[in-house]
Amino acid sequence: MTTKNLLSISLASILILTGVSRGQSSAQTRAQSSAQTPSDNSAQSTNTDQDIDLLRKDIRSQKKQIIAANLQLSDTEAVKFWPLYDQYTAELVKINDAKYGVIKEYANTYNGSLTDDHALALTRNLLTVDQQAAQLRLKYVPIFSQVISGRKTALFFQMDRRLVMLIDLQLASQVPLIQP
Image (cartoon, rainbow, N blue to C red; front, side, top):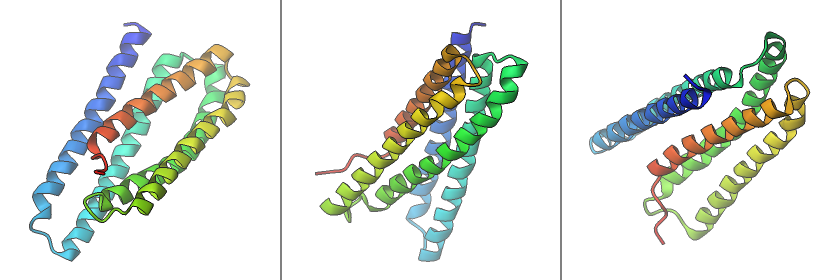
């Protein structure tokens, strides 16, 4: 099996996982929302947050497996690469926590209580998060290139970006557009 085929299969499995999990959460939320009391809504929110946290951890695990399968590191490279990868991922998780917070805030207000000012603030916040992720990648390019070749560094960031774009696309398909 070629690297390209393995990457395609792995990406498809991530999309299926995120689609199925998000679809189940959406269906459960719609089915339960009509018969909930305020305390039930709080419990539902906590359960949804926990489900999303578990999903994010699973996606990170799959992402690491995809990168490991496609980057083809020597033992010497792997010893140096994986601690850096874990450090990079920890910083990226913090940025993605902020992105999830913005999306969650939007989801809680998009159905009518979203003002023009709040919509603009959410937009600025999301763009700031995007900028932080790009800055993080720029910060880590020279760091990774000290422990793996330039080609492998480029491949790593290419895979990282593609996986993030696919996950973002799946997420965006679940978030309704703002109505003018």
